Length: 238
Length: 326
Image (cartoon, rainbow over all chains, first blue to last red; front, top):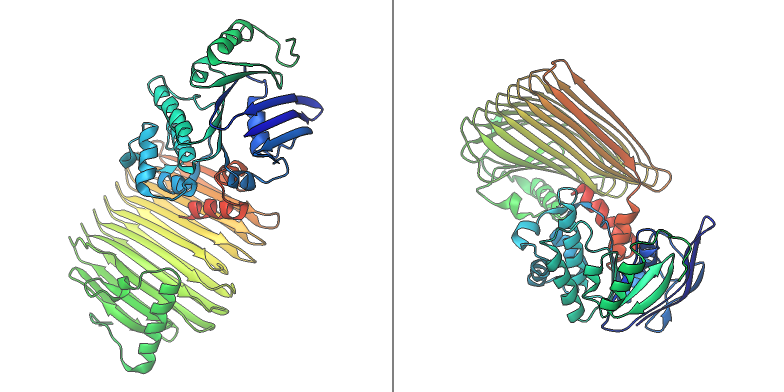
């Protein structure tokens, strides 16, 4: 479904992404595990076309088409979406409006179901603005609900667990599994081994390149043994 | 002053004007049933002609036609709690003209009412609409006032709403002025509120400036009684060559008075100009008045968030602007 080939991004003379290769199958939850500063969010931006990032070299192939030249909206209309690590807040836009904008059919009962899926009671949230009155965790879960409502072919989730407390985390992971069951492939970007347990495969990112891909248990253990204790960020030695 | 409590349609011209106003209101997105329902207090004025004036129990509306507009006395009787909003509809259908509304409001002690004013100028090319209001809110009374404008696309209109509002002990004044449909033209908004002990004043102005629109907003709140509270809030979005200047003033003159000035102006493009001048003043050491003003472009991340859900860029900006001005 998604094939990233020899992707490079250089910004202000700094090489951020270094010949990254990545393959996500249809129906797959693919975890990207990496420490801070390894390029996780940059990959999300490059695939979605956000933050004005354009590859210096390489290709991003989605369902057989190179999408690097497409706008964000065009990529979304092809079925790709992104849930940000720090989702935007929009004054005057209610949770109901936001989910309806994302929704395939805008049916309120579906919208309510998506809120329940991420552990939020619709009656308490539907008429609230997605502004600063929501906590970080609430906003993250609403972001996930909006991705559920969109039913994308590929959902890129950037650090979906950040700001989520330990009680809400299982609900959030359940929401991602639900998303996958309803047909979405998921690129799950995180620095948490716990979160990647729900993945089918996990890739480890180091200094803008994938250095290892495998099943979650083994790959996460390798990450824990090698990356958690490693101080380098910009010069992969593996 | 003559009091009228029934729909007053005399002669073809008046009837035609009335229908024209109703149609224009509906075209602008309003629900005309609100202006046609019997048990709702309402007033419909076209230029200087009173087309309809209905009171309900607890509400007295007196009108007097003048050469350039209408004088209106609105009384909410002591203790009256009006269940359904009063609808005021002012407008001018021709391309040119002047409409001056001189309004006196007396919301007596312990009364409660909500007023929705619709100001309709769909064809304005050279129109002036002035409102001069003198408003008295009694002790423990509550008055919600929402004024929404529907303008045409030529921008040939000058809107000059001015009000002095005195809020009695424990009283509440809440007003929202919204001008986001059609061109603003020239707006010179000037509201000043004086709050007694434990009174509350909230002023909100929302406008979308386009073309060569020229917007001036001046909100002043005097917190003169102990424990009085005030909020002066402005939300403006400016595109093309529109310009705006917002002055938000709040004075904390009494113990435990609390006030806040909150102004956000979004500039879309490179030619629009926005200014914000907050003034906060405290003359009692136990009062507290704060302000925040932000002027900037439409947040790129907000736009990209909506684009990532499939909206094109123009639609995404539109959703954000409508949200700010909602």
